Image (cartoon, rainbow, N blue to C red):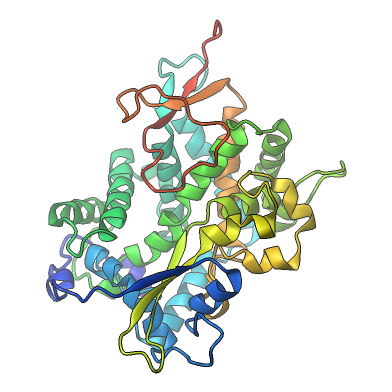
Length: 415
């Protein structure tokens, strides 16, 4: 049963997961579409043009086939990878149950986030004057995910193990896109690290805790990182945004998440997070396998979510700008083009509450502690670009590895 996910073990993970996969696969032609209406059809696996011809591959397999790289890489079997419709529905129901939290539980999560960030960020008077920002976002997001999904105490999780898991997931995810056979050494390193949190034997693909960890953690930490940078350090960052998030952290109810202040133009925490999800969607492109009736070969088709979210014809000439106030008067065309959590048949269960509020809580925890000190943002010494300053005008790049050398440093009083 799905409840075995909670007691899954890692060390004995079988190499048969990927040894059974053919090493040679036929490369499919690939086409990417930017039109929101077409992208919605692609996500639903129904079609990608105005003809009456439909996809002959059923929607579950159409979605699962492009995700087989995740099976090979991580040994998972979840709603994103399975062709078993009953299992997909059961998995989704189980996941939804795990992430449906009442306001009292959200208060606990907010307190945990505040404490985790407080212990990670050097306070005034500390000898430590800088920390790596991507590691901070990854660590806090993964620890809270493990707490929510598996009831793990985040303060009893070893920081080195957590970062090993986080960084290896990130590396393998990226590598899986470029090779059919990701590094066995890196997969083994991930298994060993996970085994320290999930000790035991007898793991199968459906028991793999990564089935839940990947959707909850991997898709959110980059949005958290980029939203934090926009709110705290970017050229149009405003004190009022920080205060809105600070107030939300103190009272993380859904009503407070949506509440806008009385001042004209005031924004809510939800506006800030929606804007982060618009500009930096968790998944930039959604892939489906199609075999249109009448065509000889199947093909891979991609819905370009990032392009839908940044289309100036829909969002205005400032579509590249982080501008939470745009959500005060959002039109139907923009709402239909907004798909950070999928759409139609395959709407992510985190869409309505968990995903946006989880991002809001962790970003707010980061922002609240940054308010206590005067920090600057720079590229880590030893990074690929030395001490180059982050651009304050162009949109941030949302690829997984772009900001792995970013760190925050306490600004010296004489600077």
